[in-house]
Image 1 (cartoon, rainbow, N blue to C red):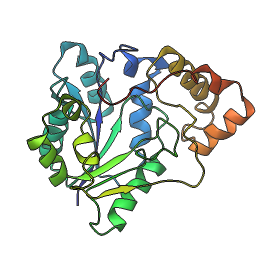
Image 2: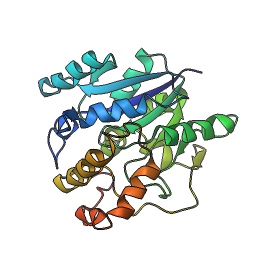
Image 3: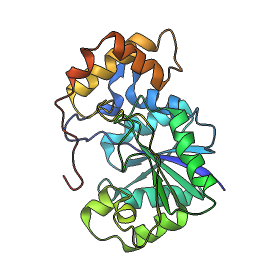
Image 4: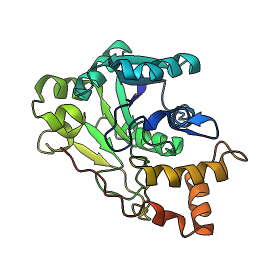
Length: 245
């Protein structure tokens, strides 16, 4: 079973344009993201799925410099972009993460993959984000190619094309849904980057941890925030966008 992490990335995000290439300590957010997901032990390949827009050529160039596979497709039909990337790279199992999560934890990626694999085919879709217990910014979704292909063929609504997986997880009567939930609810933490305030928090975290420990963990971030209890307030007011917004 070939397991491929596919990352959607583009420069034209609405609330913070160009965010994936904004730099901290001389590295872009996307480079930190790629560096971390490459450490996942249960994935065979990483693919960045960007768009055909000229504005996304810098993403293609970064991937070439880092030796990461990159595919290009529709800006708005992200489901189609994922399907094309998965087909091209012969993925049996797709792991979906998003490029605005530079603190994503490779051990969490492995945990969600392992949950799917250990189920023995009991699920069509597994995630750690339907029931929130992990910090925002550590979301992982896992689903087989056959489920992705079904969604690609049948999904019609714009949110289902733009967000890849809603066709699957909004139909529990049709698709078997698995959820990875941890005992401690950490969902009040927001480590994704969608606004300038999100970026400011992530900047402080990376500048504090990365120079001395490039492979810092989720626990390292939590320990840091305990030492700086005022930092989470930087982006506590930011509202997570809902499906279809």
